[in-house]
Image (cartoon, rainbow, N blue to C red; front, top):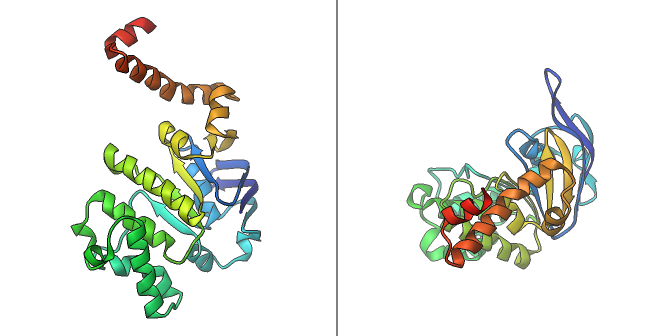
Length: 264
């Protein structure tokens, strides 16, 4: 479905944001790009839909080289969700969701049906929400509308850049579960960027760990836990392991301080 072959991105001043990266994303898979700020995650994501142009290498989506596809048309058929959401503030919810199908010239009846279908899919009934403005929605509801808009043109590829970073933990958990339900229902292929290790482990079929623009390791979460390829990967996975141990101790009556003391 998505193939990156020896892809690099170099900025002026010989800054290597991404360095000789090769990755394959299978149809229906969720691949999470994980790493610290500045490791090349977002640049990689944006090269897939040509918001950033690669310096070298090839990127294929559904068998086609993205450089041989008009970038505007490419983006209209790949859903893109980012942390800032970017809803048009003076447009209704329905108009926001309908923006790409309208640009593609869909008939009004088809657009209206698609908007209603997607609002139901993300848990915001059309009769109640289609006429609202973004400022009338909570942060979590706005994020749901962002996902609906990304899927409106019947995209089967969804790129997500820190999509849940700006919402509270309870809403974040709800949105993560909603995303997994939609992925299964719509057979989506997802590439998701995060620096949250726990989020990556919970959502991914496979995790690609990046550092300084290079790929450290890629594999299922269980494989990364069992066999970290580098010290950097091991350190990254130590945090959720330590947190899980602390939660286990708390569940069995110990205090967090007792657990920390046992490690001293």
